[in-house]
Amino acid sequence: MPLSLLPRLRLPVGAALVYACLAPLVYAPAEADTPGPATDRALQSQLEELVNAPGGPPGVITVLQRGNSRRVIRAGVADLDTGRPTEPTDHMRIASTAKAFSGAVALRLVDRGALRLEDTIGRRLPALPRAWHAVTLRQLLTHTSGLPDYSRSEEFLSILRADPHHHFDSRRLLDFVAGEPLLFPPGSRYQYSNSDNIAVALMAEAATGKRYEELLRWLVHRPLGLRDTSLPQGFEMPEPYMHGYDVPVQPPAAPEDVSELIGASGVWASGGIISTPRDMTRFIRGYAGGALISRATLREQRRWVDGASEPAGPGTNKAGAAIFRYTTRCGVVLGHTGNTPGYTQLIAATPDGERSLTFSLTTQVNEATKPQLLERLREIEENFVCALLRN
Image 1 (cartoon, rainbow, N blue to C red):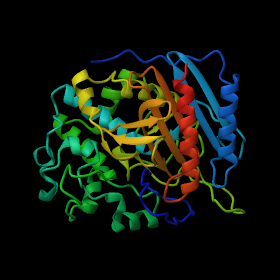
Image 2: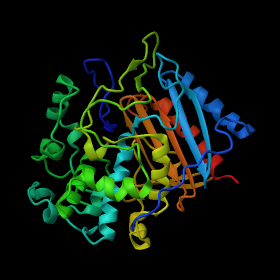
Image 3: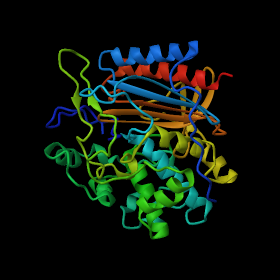
Image 4: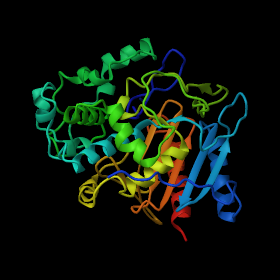
C-alpha cells in the first residue's frame, strides 16, 4: 500500500506494510531496447548497483521516452524463482502514483463543470464529519486539507494485521478517522495523507452519480489508451507480473515474495491501481503534459506549494494538485512517486509531455525503512532525468 509514513509492521508473512477525448498516445519501440550508447551503459550500471545493494530490489525496469523513441533499461529479474527478466508489459502495483489518477478524474470533472476546485466536503459529502466540512477539493488534491490519515488508524491496522487479505468497504475507509478533528486549519500547511484521495474519489462519485472505477475508465483509461490498467478489490495479481519482494537489509534473511500480500480494497483511490510500465508511460505523458485538461485548469493544477511526494522524488520537490514538481540539476519534470509492500515507483514527464520516465523497483524503499537506499535511489533517479532531458 502507499502507506509510506507508517512504521514497519510485522504481518503474518513477515512483510513490510508502509502502507475532450484524445487518440491513444503512441508507445512505439525504439530502434533498440537494450543499452547501447555509453550513457545507457552507465545508467544500467547504476541499476545493477541498486539490485546488488543491501535491501535492494530483485528487479528494476525503467522506460525513457522522447516522442515516439523509447529506451528500456533494466537490471535483475521479475521473478526470483524463474529468473525471467522484467518487461514493459509486466503488471505491478503502482502504489501512490494512483493518486495522480484520482487527480486526473477530478480535474477532468472540473473542466466539465461537474466539480469546482473550491467545492467543499460540506457541499459534496455532507455525511462526513462537520469538522471537515470547510475542506476544499483543491486542498485535498494538494495535501493541505488537514484530514487525519485513516491508514494510521490503530483499528484499521489491527484489522490488517489479523487478515492482510481483509476486504474493506473502500467507500467507508474514512470512517476509521471520522471521530478525529482536522490536524490543522485547511490550507495552512502541507501534510501527505492517504485520506485525501479517498475523499477526492468520493466527491467525484457524488458529483456524477457514477462509481469511481467507471469514471477512471471513461475519463482516463480510454482517452490515453490504457489497456492493462485496473483498480481491483482483491489481492490477486494479473499475469504476467513483476513479483514484489520484502528484501531484508541484513543477510542472511532471504527476499520474501509479497506480491499478493494485501488487497487493494484498503487503499482504493489512494493506491490500489495495478498497471504496467507501458501504460504508466502513456499515462504520465498525457497527465503531466496537460493532454487531459484545459490550459486554465492546468494553471490551477500547477500552483506549487512546499511539499514532497512519498517517498520523495529526485531533486527538490514541490506539490501541486495531484502532481509534484521535481527540480533537478538538469531541469524540471512533473510526476508522482509511490511505495507499497514489494514495489516502489516514480513516473515523471516534461511539462509538455514530450519526454517521460517510468522507474519501477520490485521492493519497497522509503525513508522509514531504508533511508540510505532511498538517498541513493533519488540520486540515480536524478541521473536518469538528466539522461532524459539532455539533447
